Length: 200
Image (cartoon, rainbow, N blue to C red; front, side):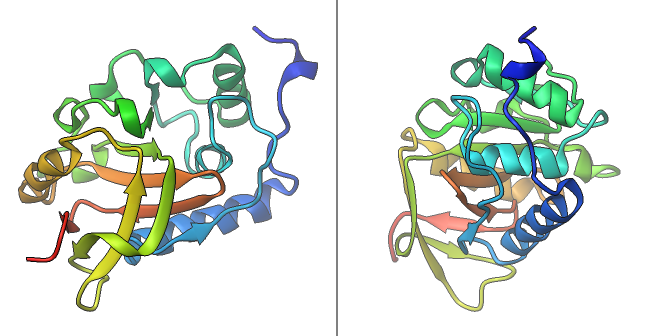
């Protein structure tokens, strides 16, 4: 365990900052693909991105098991999350309420919890650290919360992700949700959003 003086600080105002990040995530889920800046944390332990850490501090607690992909693990990150969130870190991603992964090494989506018809909310929300997010180009998004279509470019994802995402949608009301992160910016893709890689 790292010394207490080695743990990076959390929110400056835990209540207000947590509420602000929570609202940003809710709006991101309601408006898929829209970018939201969450600048409440800047100095966070590698390899966590500031937005990843902020989402965890706002949404993860002792009742939400968290899985860290192997390349997302470090003593600093694990200590930070345990200290500020009080969350259990699990070894089996199928038991996780939240997961933190890198886009380039994102595991297969079918290995995460998808919930069940009685409790679809017990699925995994996967926080994916990308190499860049931009609107107005890239993927074509459709579904609830999008008037017609929305364009979102996501850099640094391994190949095959969107084929797996196409299999995730028909599982509704079950299925995983994605929170895409780039530094202090996030966007969300709930399970109801369809993604195509170019216009038909």
